[in-house]
Length: 244
Image: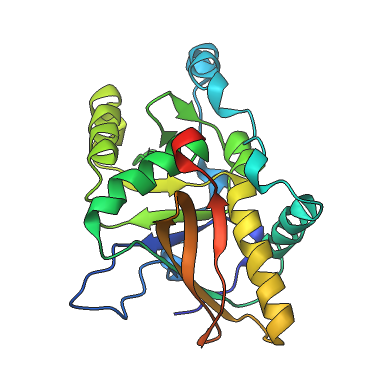
């Protein structure tokens, strides 16, 4: 399924787990236009602004560069990835979770604790609720990736607990939509690396996919594909995951 990113609006992406009975499942795809999320509808009450500001103070600091990934071209990769966010081109994206479910909790823990990935709820009032507080439109636009993951199922214990906490804390989040938001630098790095692979292989990069995994104590994306061509390589998201 393909959709064009018009007007640079954030887009909801469906995210699922990979199961043995369906290895070709594409869990992270562009949604239909009906699921496009327009941040212009977000409203935040002025009465709560001071409280909200205090609760989410920890959210507004951009992710620090992973010291283990710092190279001469690290910033260039992120820069190119950010440019790609705003290119008005069609692309199909599929990032899967591994078949081995006992890795899910560890992967999620490292994504949230080391890379500032968050599970949040988009309430029926179009406000985004997190365990720390309400997240404003400005914070989402400035610090988080425009690709918002839309999980339809999670086996991660910590995520389930987080979602239940948010629902209990905010009544308007009780029947909302669960999202995973990624730090803008994380997704920019992923897209920037894919662009490097695509350039080296002479591919237009209309379709990309990969699987989260942990290998040699590194958090990675492997089983990489661009335009249905398998790549001889992987993307290291975090080295030495026990000491991030």
